[in-house]
Amino acid sequence: MDSQLIVKLRNKMSFNLLRVKLVVLSAFILLSCGQSAQQSTQDDTSLDLNSDGKVDVHYEYGNSSYIELVDRNFDTVADESHKFGLDNKIIKSKFDDDFDGKAETTSFYKDGTNYLSLVDEDVDGEPDLFFVYKSGVLKYAEKYYERTDTGSQSKVGRVEFKFGYPISEEKFKKTSLTKEEFVESYMSKVSKL
Ligand SMILES: [Ca+2]
Ligand SMILES: [Ca+2]
Ligand SMILES: [Ca+2]
Image (cartoon, rainbow, N blue to C red; front, side, top):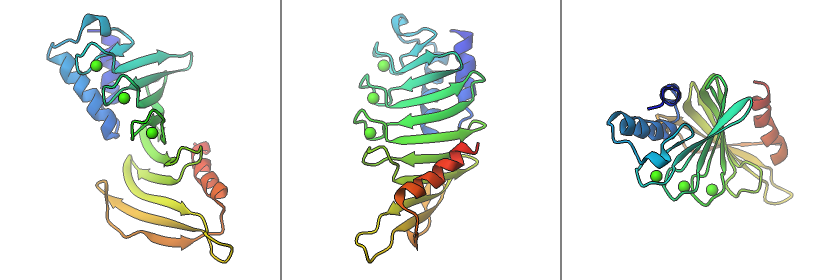
């Protein structure tokens, strides 16, 4: 086994993102059990998690960062990508959670921990759902509802979470922000870090 690869996998074990944990854990178990996948797909830049001879985790290295591409449903199309700094700290992830080939969820991390995820449900380039985390734990989600006619006002729905489960009804607050401004307020949280 390549020691550099093991170090990377160990670093990733600490991430709070369950999906990342599961994928890496599978890889770890696979490797530590000695059930090495086919030699042709095991090298420094790729892993075959389900031993079907097809690469499921692939690494692309740049000058100041590297990207991990993961195929969770083993259809040979990557549905997760994670950007890491050269210090192995995760910076940003993208997820294609409906496996249609387009990533709609973007997660942002600070000190290796997820603090904000934005979901662009209709993949029009603007997020619609906003998930806020504390120490990597989902606390609340918000959704912007555009006003439906000139007499009405736009509103923001908010749901609180505990252990990944919603613990409140959706509560609405009227807002004078346009959708662009609302998105901007979330993006400024990202840019301030
Ligand atoms: Ca595979
Ligand atoms: Ca896939
Ligand atoms: Ca998608």
